[in-house]
Image (tube, rainbow, N blue to C red; front, side, top):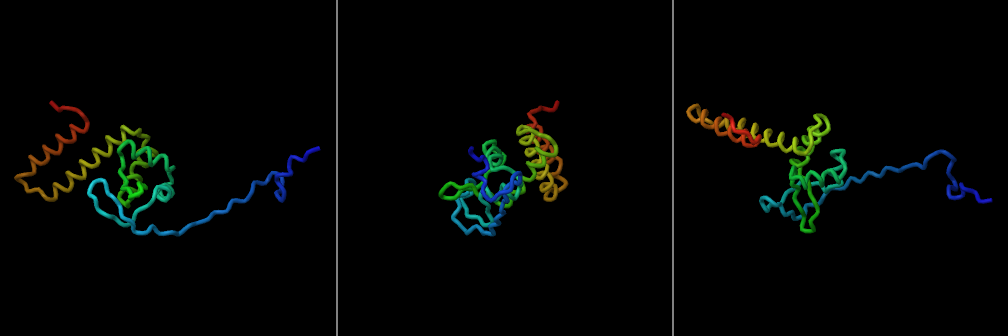
Length: 153
């Protein structure tokens, strides 16, 4: 008669094996980074596994958001994705929009477009003079309508 428990030598029956949690406190060295937009080097970057752990998201979800164009991490010479603090903040916003508000990718794109426009309006209002204010606001509103793909009558 073959003992089915022979492969579990030293384990108690019905008790799962202990899992050890190993924490690696490793800083990311300053590496030359090819930023797709500006061609500059940056500090404070996270590889995809660390970014996923910080955000409590799966790395595949981060790749999906990159394919959808919601985030653009910089790349090393070896093409590793490196997420900046700005990318992390943006991904937290995306996580809120998807998880808490129930938006799909298209909804997130629309919400981020509107959010960016509102930030632009806010910064423009601080810089605009009263004479330029009306035309500035009209331009911003027209851009917001174009994001929504509507033409106000």
